[in-house]
Image (cartoon, rainbow, N blue to C red; front, side, top):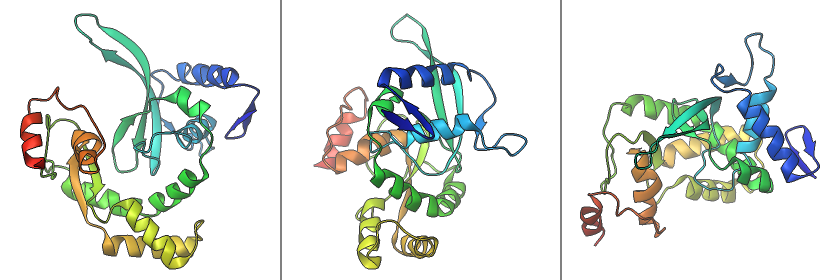
Length: 233
């Protein structure tokens, strides 16, 4: 039995069938938001958000989800142009990402820690949006910048005060995992007083910066790779 939002599925196959029909039925429709034009809760938004929260990849952003949209994505491997239906997530700060790995989300077990962490991320969303607004026209701020600049920019916590390290130290300080609204307010003050944010392009955030944390990534397809290796020495 698999439970996603308020729906129970007897099998993984049944869940995949349901979400495939749900997504295909919204192709090229208006953006899917939490409430419709009559301010009624949108069930499609609720189902898709519940699915995102099950995403097994750590780099999938869970906070500040504003809307979903279903569009055709054109791929061009070699000379063969292919299209497929893609689900996009738009965030409150204007960032948009492709929501990939939907089948993996269905197969994954719901992670209570990710849901809790999402509460903390939502609490600092105003800070992230304000930083993005101030720097939206700036170039990538990562010293070891690699690859093309037109990769889309993201807000990153500069080490050593990463989001996770700040969260861990705050939890030790207050002694709780599941915060109250008052504790979330204290968390925002703690975060804003101790974080150092930077404006980085998507490629550096998902590949270059992770290289600093010794996570292996294949970057040799970029001409800047050799220069990047020199900077790491």
